Length: 473
Picture 1 (cartoon, one colour):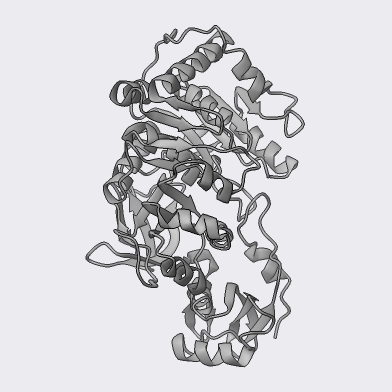
Picture 2 (cartoon, helix red, strand yellow; picture 1 turned 45 degrees about the horizontal axis):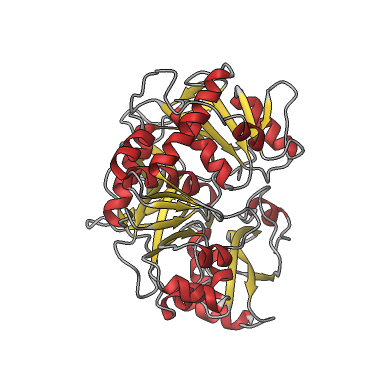
């Protein structure tokens, strides 16, 4: 299936790609993608080749990714914020046939051809819009490689098929409609599955994708484009709610999808108070973004992540681990030139998330299996304690780690960031936590913090770093 050709036939002159200086229709979008695809063929590249892209979000990057899709090649957008040595290791594993970058000073590789995005687009002028090379357009062909966050020090290359993106978009759309007349702002990076998957949602459903300039703030982009849908992580939502004009625009949207890390009570309460149509979500790179999402905008604080979406299957293992499968499940990780499946004998992928699913499909995630520790003979999930801490007024962010204890083996300790210095007090927090999660799960110590150490090229807090920096009791 040629998604761009299909979109051009179905949606024609409707807006497909909104940019600061112009808007492309689906027909124009398809034509420009075809020109890029033909240029790639002329330069000796073939369908199935891996094309790595190292660039921040730009309209030009979106066009190039569309051209790569049109050519039947495999797009691998990479985190340009990664340190150079980490990027080099990722590229060495990928072995792409071409690297596209917005600036060769940002990244280049001695053994792999590197071309700037600007020069590639400049050379498409004069290329025909007719497809010059035919190739197998099966739904099972690989179309993208998205790297998981390198929380363990190694970024895993998840390979997705066209079918994965197709069914992910269909299932998401059944819960949170997005179509002609709508506009979704590309606010998450394209190297993140939550950003890259939006290209497919737009092409499949006929809604427009808006892409601002790399230095534009979200607030500016929301006021520039007729945005109806938005995906954000808690940090981004904090910044937008601090801007009065931005908040007014958020209130008029159809949907704001909040994912990533757990959001504190204060943030959820603030969004609800401003009547923002907030949806919570649980997803993963391996399942091609969303697994579960709120069925409607939430009007009160909730600990669950919504209901299981269509085309996804979910169950619990004996130890409480969440297992997933279905047509959204990725093909496997790319390692040493081959795609290695990650499912068990029954086709289930083990997420390493601990949680539960109710009979009505409601999904609640408690934490990561590899973060769990034992205290006094009980299994302790740091994320459960973190959520409880962030329910306390005044706490903006929390991270719980295990520290050695001569009596219990380990006890929880918490790094906390508050809106005001030493408010709430340690004693106040302890009293509330004793009442909500019990004494065993109440942190034995609190470490006040105003700035977090994050993973390279990411906004995720580095749990391992904070664990190593914590003294024992």
